[in-house]
Image (cartoon, rainbow, N blue to C red; front, side):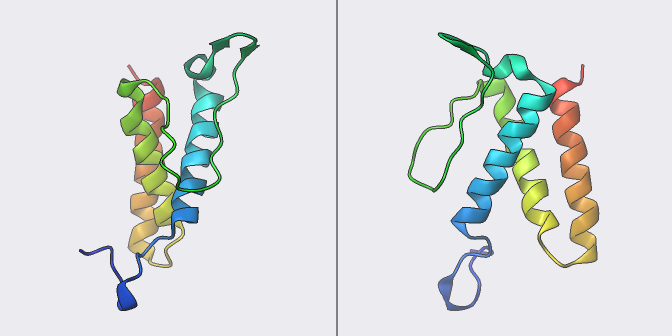
Length: 102
């Protein structure tokens, strides 16, 4: 597996991935609050996660890929390589296009 580093540790910690998920959901809420509309009581609050505990992320199937794209961009921004910054910026732009584009 390419994700495994020295000593069998993964390149990105679960906490970093969960944080990127929370960021993605908040950004999706900013751009598309209708995706988080609930009826009783009426709120637009996205779920927030604290750890990797197999809790399902309830988001419409067609919007899952933009969420994953945003997460990949945010995680890559944490890397210290110049090539990653450009790729991360592209991922974040793709997220917005996928979420609100025609």
